[in-house]
Length: 269
Image (tube, rainbow, N blue to C red):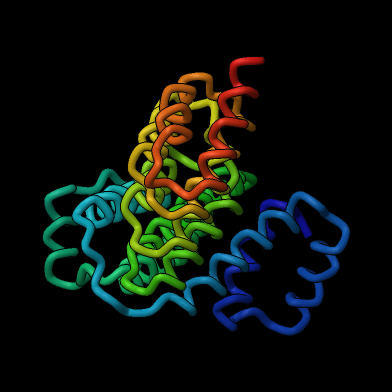
């Protein structure tokens, strides 16, 4: 079995249309090929995550735009046929609501349809593994963004944690995590977002957001986590915010002490 056949057969297996002999052949190949195994594990995890997304209304026009663009790209890349953006937008308005679950499931169905169509249209010997890998990445990112838009705090927390599993997450993920840090009503979600933002710590927008958060966050747990975050990332721009925190008599003493410790460490960097 060739590597370029792995993804298409794995998708057939997910759909339940792969025969027993082919399934055995796929299992043997995955056991001996780390690259293909990594590709299929990512798709399998995404497939499992989709089943747990609740059907609730998402208050995000940006999510709908993102989905429409991804849908158009999927059609163009998989079918090799230049689509009409107007037709796709019209189809979405008629058939797809703004519920995240329906949007993501529609993306999965489109991905599967694209694989089937691409299988028929691609030249002999060509490989669609790189393109499919990108599609899987885009879908995983969409799942994380969708979860972070949910009404349920537990689902938003799942979205933040899911973002940690993404390889090379885009700017949209960083922006969503900053939004969670600054505005989420749940302390646990805000704490998780601080941890998730560590991988973006060198970005100026993240360093600025951490400084701003020090001035506006009132939860002692979040304040302590932010102090540790700016110290660990050597964000010297936070020294002023830390000083204000250390001198604020309305702040808990443990936080003020930690802020003073943070100032000493950053000044020594």
